[in-house]
Image (cartoon, rainbow, N blue to C red):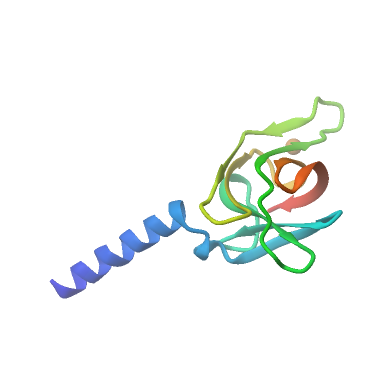
Length: 135
Ligand SMILES: [Cu+2]
């Protein structure tokens, strides 16, 4: 009985952690410098993988202070030889901490994806692109 309750508590903690906090997503996938901003992708594994992913995009200053970038959009595409680029459905939502956004993205293929981030808010308006490898 004790074990059952502990397991349930652990399962609830994990479930809550995946949707509400960024603490379990502490492993950096990659960081990019965009002017005064440092943009970091984080995931539970430190990678992005083919298929559905939950990850975090975080905005900080070069001095490691959290920044509120305001409205954030993220898109990803993969150029395909002889075909139109493949795009990934991506949803971005504020994650509850300054500068942190929860992202859901579905990558149909592994390989190098081109990401474009746009932001518009207290830190100004800007955009940047970078490549990240999906395993
Ligand atoms: Cu592809």
